[in-house]
Length: 442
Image (cartoon, rainbow, N blue to C red):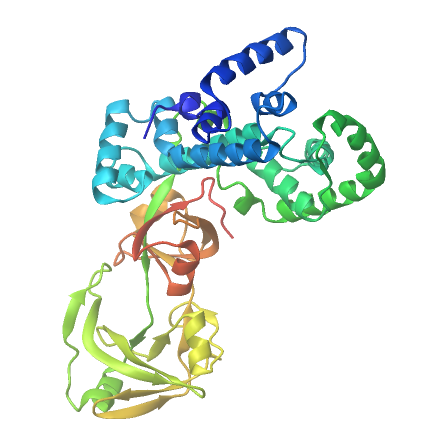
């Protein structure tokens, strides 16, 4: 990695010289002419001047601009932002860089593994790094060799006016979501001559203004209908100023609950032999619960899944917990249910080494839930049976709504989701989630 900030963005002239499109002494003359233009109030770019003077071809300048943009992407590093905000020191960042170079892991993973800052701060830095890169690329591409979409101006005006007059959150993420949705719903109108942008703006404003207003209104309604997903970045003044927000974040360990089976002792006898007792493979994090060495085959109308783990100890009912993907393999329609609420659920055939049983019901997709001690519930401010929203901090971060809170003196604080939910968020088998504060309870 090189220097941080604007110093890391190489000048266009360097790329033109490297490509032998220009000589070094020509760059100096072009800079002198550019400065002379600034004095007269005319803004010109090196590449544009070089083409007008016949020193370089337009396609050579365009290629150099693309190389410059690629270089900006290469130096993008959330460590820059963390250092700038004072959340880590430059020495810590450099140590994380060395670790990243040794291990091959991304710099943000190295920072996280070293515990240099909280996951929330790292996430904010990653987002701001993306914004910085986008801004730099926009500046690079703002030349006569990169056509400009005039609809961006029109939609930007409509978005600002709509957000200001509506009760929608005014954070930058919500504004950007409305802006992006509206732009995607409109035809692009590009102008290659940047000197005529104002002219074409007036023309397209008259032609597309009403349609743009309609598309922005629809986009705003969509974002307003799902504000929690839109506001995941929480771009508040406190965060951008670097002030602490850790006191508003309630973190919870998130673990994947893969497909598994709970059996009664009678079912254990039928599947593994009379008098058989489940044998412990490994303890689970909830007290008294364990994964057994025993597995069964679960069969449905369409297909079967082998080696489904049995969890112990034995319970008073048989329950099969699968994912949404699993139900298609089996040919079942398993509803999302809280554990133990099996009325109206489909059944299945379970096969073990000593026999098989047919259960009339008990196949469910487990409702996403959080186990809590009463002390945890009191501290966080929720009650048993409440539903909360939790942000999953994977590489495709998402917010899960309707997460059931289960409170008992026999529990430890832990959230369970199924494999489909984990894959959607891109999280590993153990991750961290954040209960949104103020808590969104149902």
